[in-house]
Length: 520
Image (cartoon, rainbow, N blue to C red; front, side, top):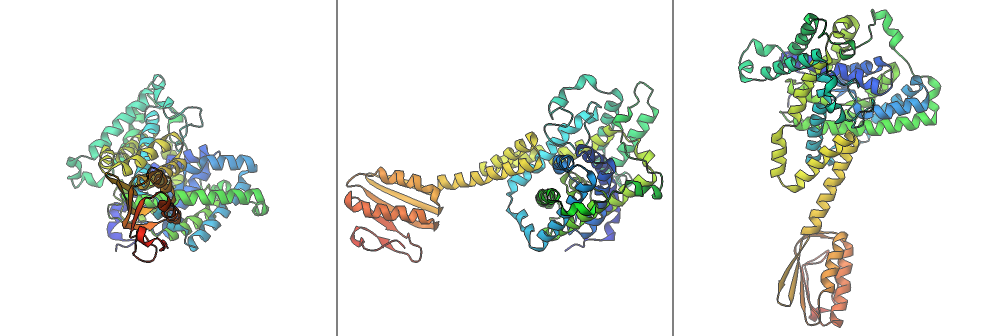
């Protein structure tokens, strides 16, 4: 088993942490904006998610930070509660609940999500990233990064924003296009095979190219400040205390705050467990994350984030997938990205504010494509309807709602499809003249009773019926009762009944000559 920290992979983890940092920076800011929270609260959550959760988590490649899936809940809670300081108590309470959930073993929930739904989530996130980043890449989307809902906070939808090409910014379009070409070229075999070029992270090169292009652009092409990264300029470590907000002590006894804390704990835990499962599936080395430990790590992360003015954290798939695709090997990459967030925000915010959002959009477009490769659709289609239907349903649901609702819809469809498939295959009918043979396959449940009763009612006087249970593993009690009732009725209708291997405790054969034996 590989180590959680292995410094022989320091070069890969360092390179990957820079990529994750570049992806995480605008998302931290954007999610705090969508959440109607102070701008710096998203950065605090990103730093805590990287450093604190990164140290405590058992996930090799998972990266935590503020989650888009909680943005609407956070915004509504702040508005309902009335102040951000009081809301922070709910974040702390949510963290305490998550720690408790970890200790009581609630992390096992992650293993109950079908692989088709998890793959659908990954593909949907990839498509959503592409659809959301195209407007940023051409300078038409003023909605903050991190707004992954279909109905955006600026009144647009995912698709309506794509039709807004007449207002594009030429400078942003040029930067986005050139950065995208650089990133695609950096994925080529020629660069991968070059030992020197391969040491340079493609996303970092794209970012510097974006800064340089915008610096040398003529005035007509210069990208506006609204389309650049915008973070608070603290100026010094002594000024940091002004941005650290603490929860009020009295708010911990507020019932409304406690209720919000419970809601955040449940949703943050579900989103984390889903992302853990998805990250483990993307991991080339297939590490298995200890889910109960992950809930504890997220809980302690939320406690600290809430105490110092941060919004809630979860493990997040966009940053985690960026880590995997950038070549991260151990959890050091996630931890370093947290330190990079802190260090650059404190020391060089003016340089960060020169980064064009279109350059970062190009990085996310590549990540989105890798998550939603056409080969995945083809593979799931060939694996059969039981895999493809939940997969495609999850994609559609996530795109038109949000991550959590989409996953739940996909899960329901997946369960429904399993039940429907079992309903159709549990009872197989064979007819030879007036002899009907009903074969029970594997498991027969109460919802198969209607089909069975329909077959019973179609029999006429003088017919013969054989109920074959030689291949059944489980028969629901309602099915036993239906068979018992028909057994009593078959004498009156003069129907010859043969019952083979249908019993709860022993193999038995029941026919007309043995009418006294019961099915038990």
